[in-house]
Amino acid sequence: MSHERTFPKFDELMWPIILTLRDLGGSAANDEIYDLLLERLQLPEEMVERPHKEGSNETRLRYRHNWAKSYLKKTGYLDNSERGVWSLTALGRDAKSINTATIKRLVRNSIPSARKQDEDDGEEQPASWSEQLLVVLQSISPDAFERLCKLILRESGFTKVEVTGKSGDGGIDGQGVLRINLISFRVVFQAKRYKGSVGSETVRLLQAATQGRADKGLVITTGRFTADARKEATRDGAPAIDLIDGDDLCELLKELRIGVKVTMVPEIEIDETVFRSI
Image (cartoon, rainbow, N blue to C red; front, side, top):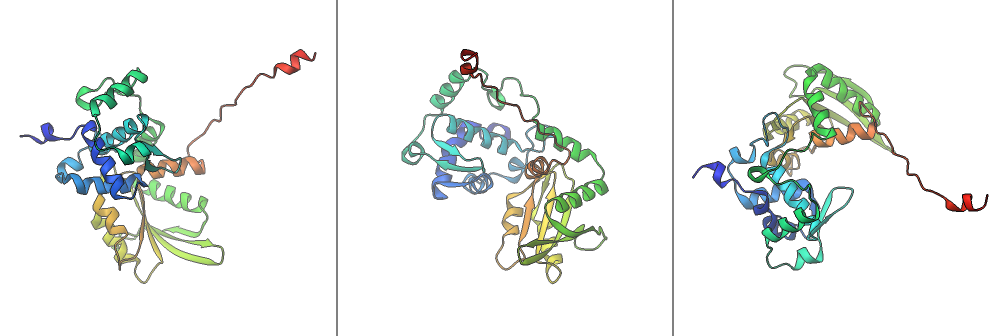
């Protein structure tokens, strides 16, 4: 049987997601859920890393994982906060099983424009602002991306930021100092303008380069990190490495207003008392 036929559809991920959240104590960040879900599913790497569509920064599995959570939220099994933390509702905690056909029907009946998934898909929705931004970021030169990372760090409160980019320097592209109240941290960073995934080897190299030279390491990429890379970044006994993937990078650029304009739409309310008092 081919991988294509056995690749889990989004509705087949719904119950495993609920079980995974139970294993995580009822609430977790998106990456925590996804990483533990991968352990539960035990899928081959080729399947895990397969892009959703050609040129996409998102894998097919993560795409379906996100839609499965969305359907579970719309039918009351999950909830999520503005900070990206997903949690089980009482319905999700108490459920002994779920009927995925009913969940899909409820969502699609309540939202006529709800998109079907993959083989059952309707038309693709237009690219989001973050997807458009990633296309732009992936088109600039590696040197320009390093300079962008330098600007991001400066705008985030770092001082003494410089791009080194020396070959044979353990992957270190630059460094800076972050001061928090009375304490300062020396941070080295690596800028990776990728379309695909960044693996654990990149993290290990930066960990080795960080030892004795800095307090923390940071990898900024336009791509995504594999589950092994995220595990390696927090491995006991190794220097901690913070990871900023393409989605995090887009949100950071929006927050810092670097290359992203945010238009606030005014809320208009009619005050009838004014006219009645004339």
